[in-house]
Length: 250
Image (cartoon, rainbow, N blue to C red; front, side, top):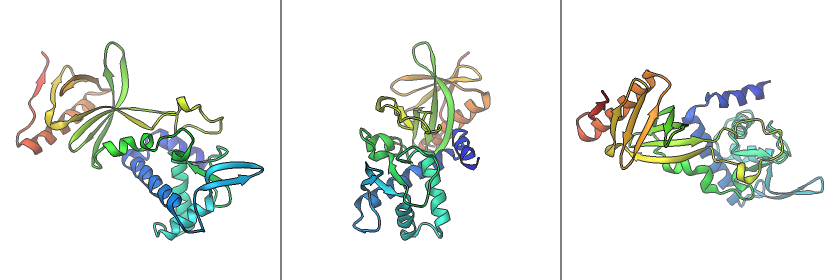
């Protein structure tokens, strides 16, 4: 029941975007330590279990040992809880797709070590985004005719229009997805410099932002639109000393 609640929590966004990025970063760091370690007590390597070889894997207890050695956690219970969270966001997973992390000889693998997986794919959003994420807002982007649900992310210097892959937090007690169906958590569709933006408010729930190209965005509520417009205008003012001139469609 507790594990189900954790899974529901992440799908509902309880972790939040900052926490999610923090988990990605920790997973990336732990993988690098395990992969490059010369310590015989832990490491990522091919391991045999029940007459089958699991490539690039490691026992759960070795990961916990390493995390304690690094000094990030005061107890095994704290380290195990972090491993649970890394499982939830699919940074690592059990080789047989069980969802409970176990501090024993059970084998796990970092998602970045999966065959056909690109490390750049997993952390693309982290490399592109400024660390100071100020706002995360769901909206619709209208390109051509059909509105597309997207996530709008604002940092202190950029606006990102991103798509999200919602398969990753769902239960993984199922056969592995084919590689062509595995998506990164976020994909940046458009990246805009706030310093080059202009805005046109079309109605109480829709606005157009433009740089080299225009993007029509529709929000669920008027307050959501105001929050986005107000934040972008404020960031513009911090840069140039005067607020952004926001036009309104008559």
